[in-house]
Length: 123
Image (tube, rainbow, N blue to C red):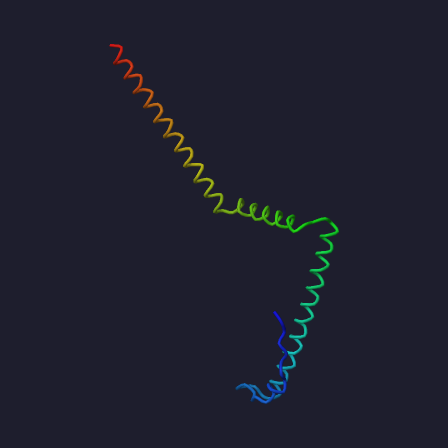
């Protein structure tokens, strides 16, 4: 985002907004100019800090891939400790147990039927 210079001469020609005296408007415009200047300074400081951060990472041998790995690892950890993940894991575990029990029952029934069939053939 870039700063757009304010044309004070053009803005001075307009009348003060309703409810503001000319002195109040002038004070607000002065404050606005100061805040815009502070924003510009903060952008410059942030850019310098980002450059310095990049230099430190380079000196430490940290690559962008390392940062990505760290972010993914933290995100995966956050997912694992979330309530939604725990509930999903619990539900899937219960479904697995029920499926295992059902398959075991089906296997038992098939075994019994097979034995009955074999016993009928022997007679």
